[in-house]
Length: 162
Image 1 (spheres, rainbow, N blue to C red):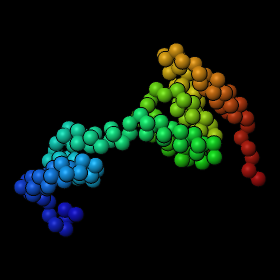
Image 2 (image 1 turned 60 degrees about the horizontal axis):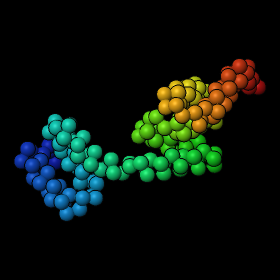
Image 3 (image 1 turned 30 degrees about the vertical axis):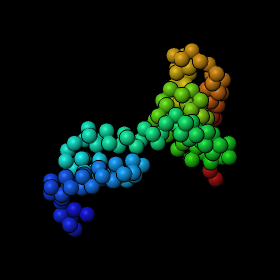
Image 4 (image 1 turned 135 degrees about the vertical axis):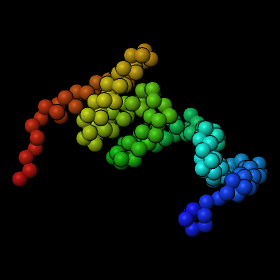
């Protein structure tokens, strides 16, 4: 875009920020306004301010209820054998709730379902460590089951393709 119309001047940027502020005062749910404001701030080298602006929309969008809904949707995807979408949801939850035992269990099981044994073992181990730190062992059986499956699958000789 800058190649076609030229880079906005500081006065242009100030005017754009003024318009965006007015739009956001009228409609605080105009998320594109926050994104555009952050882009202008980033162009001005104001990364910290851009983060603050973007956080105004990211935090409300990913509150605990939304994160729990994403986790539950991931479980539904996993149960219906849509592992890639399940994995995507579980990784989103991991970003927001890195210590959630149920999610770590689902990550381990989904990676196992997909045949990614290293990742399955990693999340099973991570889950057991986290369970120990939290003194919450409700998912231990699931973590151990994944670890056992990984051991069995790793000890099998590779299949020959004819």
